[in-house]
Length: 107
Image (cartoon, rainbow, N blue to C red; front, top):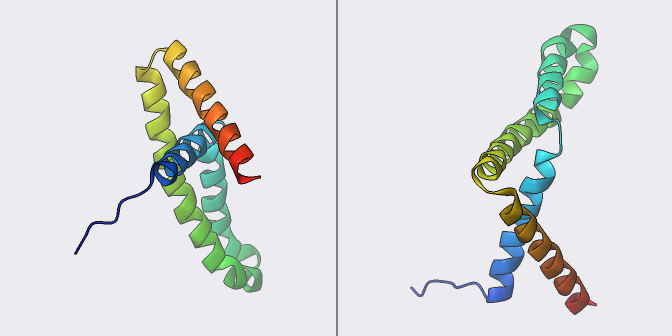
């Protein structure tokens, strides 16, 4: 079976999306968000059992996504600590330029 290959545009779009998402996550306070989710999960059933039952599935889904996002955020923070600031600026400027170019192509 032949291996599927991404086009250059598809590859760059995914790469830019991952980097952009990781950069955005660095700016968020995910640890506090996760703490608050866990607090809501632990006391929700006591404070309002009916509401908790309705919201529990969504709460667990959001917590799972937040924990996965935290891993991506932590990787990006580690990468930034290991990379000189000039290179980070250059990469971010390049990403913004490419994002702008891609947006212009779509129009």
